[in-house]
Amino acid sequence: MKSKIIKIVLALIVIAIGVVAYLWFMPHRNVQSVKAFKTIDATALVNEFLTDKEKANALYLDSDEGESKVLIVTGIVAKISKDQLGQQVILLKNKKDKMGVSCSFTLETNNQVNTIKIGDHISIKGVIRSGAEYDEDLDLIENVIIEKSALIK
Figure (cartoon, rainbow, N blue to C red):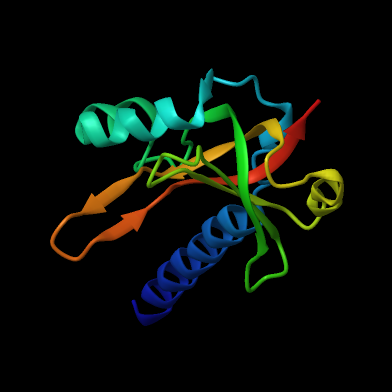
């Protein structure tokens, strides 16, 4: 009886390890090869989240599967910086806007940013990760966040 229980427990452990290994090593989605859901101006995207956050979240973000929409966002470069991982980050925003769209590039696409200057009007393709928010009480601004970005020529 004991050996039967031990065999069942070992079989469950092997199955659990197999499932974890499959999920861990599963290939990541290649955002640049996926057809874009929509092409949208940075200001319009921010305004969608500020006007009706629930509707915009339902349209663009997928919290269950992690397969949020791939977008092409157009706008004016307001800021170029690097994050703590060494990835280039471009903020698309008009001068009159408080918020914009923050686009994080990957290490593979970082070199595309070398030719960009502040004030350029560009198009970027990436996957949306979060929407814009504004807290009036604290005067906190959160930009729309786009990840795995690449320039569209």
